[in-house]
Length: 576
Image (cartoon, rainbow, N blue to C red; front, side, top):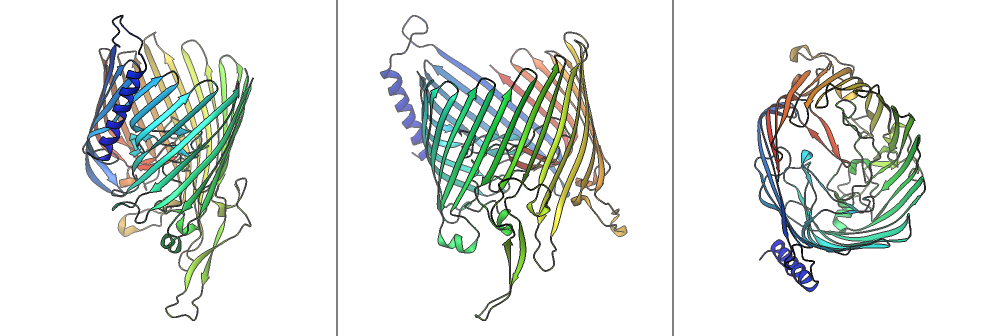
């Protein structure tokens, strides 16, 4: 019997014994606990053409997720049968992807099988699944917990097989052993901490040499009347082989800070947040090495402090957070001057902790010595607050304002303006490649309206216009290849129209246009028509045809490029 089956069998035996030893409350007067269940199925199919880089390929995907849960008193059994072959994003999977058994009573919980875990705000552990980008970080093991008004604690352990979304073959394996707890001495006050030991395993498609990391954190929170505060510190110690240390840039220690201070009132609410993630401050030539052992681990997903939007252009090309090396802040202000009007103001900024310059180390007199490139830090110590004006720190900042006004019982109007400035500094190699900055700036205006025609019929419209400068879109003219010169300036326009007949059906159209010719395939216009139809109370059918534009999509700070797709999609969601 392999390890996953042994773990599952062990929990079944443990939970069954626990359930038998504690008398269950009869559900139906016979002394026999009532058996309940829930079933759900999600089917997705798509066929068409998708770009990979600058080349189009035929793309077909089929995904089906069948979830079931059985509830017997305080005992839960669950599993997910999954058919992803081929999958839109992520690794193909056929079989039982998720299974677990869990017992809960009087604040006590015991679970074995698959689980995701969030400790505090995620500086030590925040594992989750995001199917749209193919990210998945489950643990297969055992988790025990207790939670009441004054105290909470958990202990867990298991194996995590993490498939790198930036590689088609790389799978990293981790052995996890951890515990966390929080004491709440009085209402609104909590003090807690956690400890996690991680062993990176040597595998054919993962780490070539094993390593160990030890993560600790302490946090405190306060809620008093209209005020709230949270402070979190975590550190990370790495034990890495001498070979890895000699052939790469790695740190034995790293740390991270997160803080939040908030005020909530009737007409004004303010939240200010701060981050300083120094989990692995390395030289520029290793900053892009996502497989280095000392980096922030794939389940360390702390607060991003990056505004999130649900609109096409407002959310286009978001800032990608580096949890190993980033210092920044975000401020949210919500104003409600009158019952019909609400205004949200947001501002965020971030940068690297250090600035670097390229230096050339000449060859010495030893045999086989060669000239080499190295990097010298320009600042004496890592920054405590982001530098937003010095491009050598790769600064990012963003500001937005959004207003929503209820003009009448039937009409709601929205207006948003946004400015985003993101710069990534490249130090060059000191020879052929000069230092330069990859700049992206965007100014966006959004208009939105929602009108209730009747109690059941609703019309929703969103219009966005955007002015962009992107150095990656700069091109020199090449008549032989038909390439026009571009200075990197262009405009985007997006329009979304949706009509809903609640709760039965809806239809929508989304169109996007750009003036640049540097998108995948040189395409400048994209459009989709989609609709949903509810069948009974349990099933929802969705259809879509058209083309979608390529762009960066982020979930919880994890980002990937979602390529342009033209074709047909169908989905069916059933819940029983």
